[in-house]
Image (tube, rainbow, N blue to C red):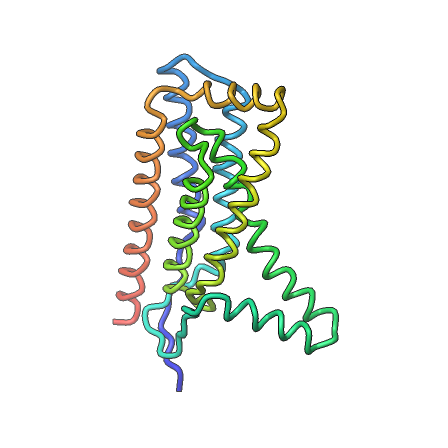
Length: 228
């Protein structure tokens, strides 16, 4: 008999607190440095909303597992992908093929915005290998976090597809960057970065991580009180 012990993570309060911190920090930096570029703000806010939606779809239904005996991770590269393709070729129904197509192509396209937008944040990030590494690292964080969720397991194939999607996004960026007017626009967006942008990004990520862990331990504490 499979044993499952879990509690529901309060994603709504997480989003509210992180959004509040993001808004306050953006306003504070704008007032402090007296530097506000509309396109730069569109990029930063777009990335914030993108990651919020990505994490929501990735971690939903936000059920934290405390104990499970049947969890099996896929640690063999391409095994899951080849199996899905094989299933699509065996079963003739459109539903199966559509599911396989969405699963594979979706994991690729899901990370393409990272490869396209990250180089616009800073000139030091205008390197394909670095952008792909960042996309792969973010995907790894997601996969590791999924090991604590119900209906989710670690899948090395997702890392491969996500990294490939990041690469496609960067190649699209490089293609657009070859056009002079577009390149000038990209440079304008990068040059609009406020001082200490990396330090600000690191501070905000640390803040978001602390809030995430705080809500987790609070939920765990409430759960333990209920079952006692």
